[in-house]
Image 1: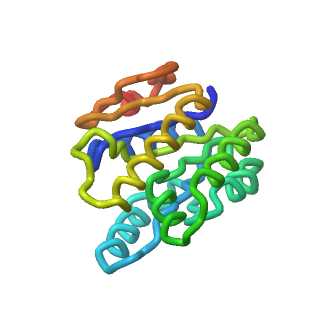
Image 2: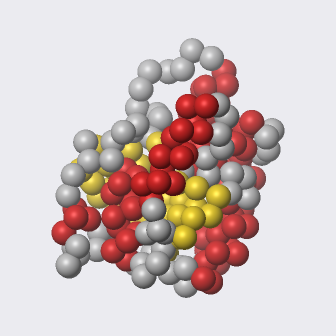
Image 3: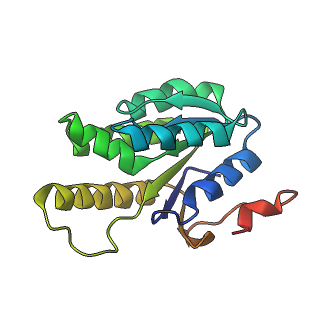
Length: 184
């Protein structure tokens, strides 16, 4: 199975779905976290996510150099879950980096990574109202473009709503012994 993109709204169940999938597909998958603690609330979220993962994943934290980190980590892991693309884009914007160039590099890296399956988690932010400020509109547009590019190169794309995965492209693996993959 090739690379996968898992999209969904806030609290849609996308991360839980991706984690169950990664655990079913990998022997000891890696969890590549892109979050940075910009404030106390985000620090608490990051701590909760670390605690929830326990020792089920090898955790890698990389807020900016996603393509480089995937290239470096792929030889040691059969599955790498990236959580999440929209936080990575936020980090790039805050660091005044060129998002389009970073996405180009990521797409190039995915083409090179053939021994590890990458599962991307990202927030679908284009379904709501048009943001009222230029920076938010820029973010929405950059995220939407990144999602389109990832969906094009990933073998499977899934949209999670209310904890339920809706396959947009490709197929999900059979549940086999882990029926939880397909549960809400």
